[in-house]
Length: 514
Ligand code: GLN
Image (cartoon, rainbow, N blue to C red; front, side, top):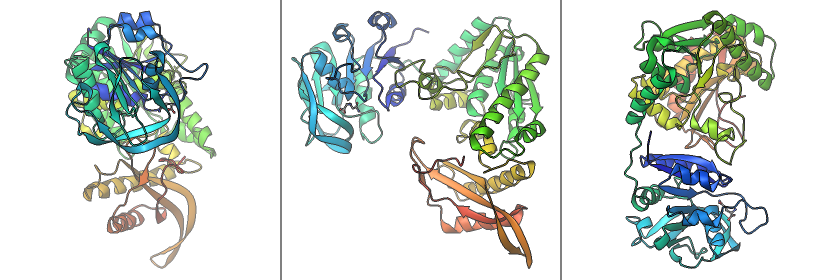
């Protein structure tokens, strides 16, 4: 694939993946690399543009993350963001200092919209600031193109060398016209025409998979989640029945979810592949009996998945490739891509089954962000109900049941959750609320039903609004809707006599329960 490429150089900022996503939204392919990447390697990739990200350091300090001055004289346009803007100024002979007034949050900024970077941007607009240092003196050859009340150089340019520096964060949605600014850089200044799209991705991936796999056999563990499902769809289109999918139903899926996965990928579904469903409910419930500690539950569920998968793989025998639904954020967060790195090692990247006999790994979604994976899924004709699915933890309902997991409790939470989802959709709130589910608290209390004493469980309803799932607030579901859900759950689900609505935001809470 000989595509236009823009490179994001990672200095450890928190929004770096967002930068790359925004560039791809301009239909330009983009990858993230550490600031330690060799200049020769960067040159060899032949990027159309380079973007330097924000970062936690102060660039004037000893041992701060840096870059060689030659980076700015490759003849490739460079855009520095925040730390990247400061570093560019410092390396090229300007001065960066600690600011008397820090800026944090939404800030009014005045931009010179006669310059290409801000073409079409409102002269007085709102940007997102997050910095302690500031550009006290620009490098020679630069001129100011934006300023705020407290920040004299909110942006600067040296058009002769195609160098641009922005102190604020255009990648963050709070910068109202940020996408336009990045578009101006990528499509205008770098001259990219935008050859990255999901339909061409599907076409080219199918070719690439066929080339790589040849007549070989591929094995994929299907979890029912978005990533592995889309990987299955893509592989099936490419190699049909050379692909075997093993779907492990661990008995901790939402109501009917296992059957839905089978309806799509099973022998009667729309995809051509070999499909094996393992109903491992009993095996899981046995292993989970008596276990109450959340981390231990997670560990058991994860390990058991691999064991069940291995057992099945042994029956299938040697395969040529093991396929995985690894996606780009997994790669970046595992420290294999960028610098913000080593936040967590990812199961898709790290934990391979030991006893599966394969020659090579194949990861067809490795370069895609989540929203791109969803687009590919829709492109392949996988139903929206699966592709647009809300985040669902790998350990499934196992971590939506506080305390010990039993078959009875799973049934209760499945039924309550199904009613909850039905009513939210009925009320037309399902697109508005970003994530919602029922959980089973471990609390039992006294109630009265039909004049009889009950001693049953309490269901907790969770519903949050969030943009990035890093912070979230409880959704304000109309009281009448909540009442209806409460009454249906208590009437229809045996073993429940109380319903709570969770008001906690994140932080301090989490979205999930355990
Ligand atoms: N650490 C630098 C500062 O405080 C850059 C911050 C950033 O990139 N967000 O100014």
